[in-house]
Image: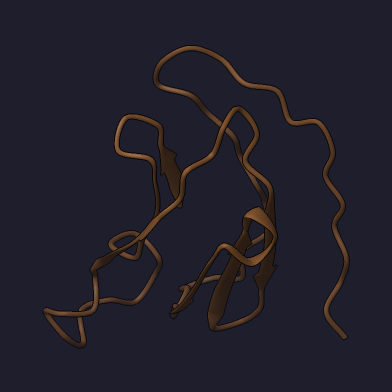
Length: 95
């Protein structure tokens, strides 16, 4: 998932999410308009087969089913242009 600053969109791309070959329509990108003025606030919920994103205190919400070949076990951040700061991050196990 990523935030496209030029288009002001939050994007989830399932093309590399794990098992996708069962349907040519599954490896899709879903997009939500997300006008963020300087700070992007996200609440992410990741379990065995879904990823949910709640952005800007509920201004946009996106859910995607995924079928990873192994459990997701890390979070990475990167920027293709410019820089950013992760101000806070909390990780909670789902029980």
